[in-house]
Length: 86
Image (cartoon, helix red, strand yellow):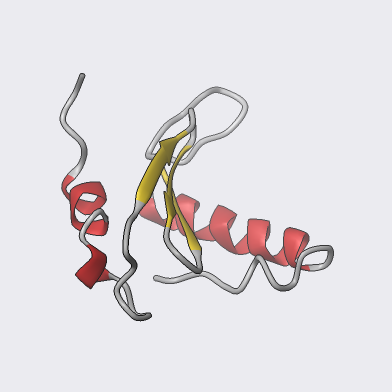
C-alpha cells in the first residue's frame, strides 16, 4: 500500500480540525478524493488526478471544482455542503 500524502496524514490527527477535536476520524478513499468522516462533519480533499473525463491535476483546478460541487449540491443539501476551505 503506498504511503498517504503528507496532507492526508495531517488530517488524520484530530487536532487538525477547527471544531472540538473529534473522537475519531474515518478515512474513505474514492478514485477522485480522500474523504474524512469526523464526529460532526465530513471533509473532502480532491486527489491530483487526470482520469480523461476530469482533470484535477493542479491546485487551481481542484479548488475550482470544489467550489462548483458546493454550488451545485448546496441547492439540494444546504446542511451538508457548507463551503470550501482553501
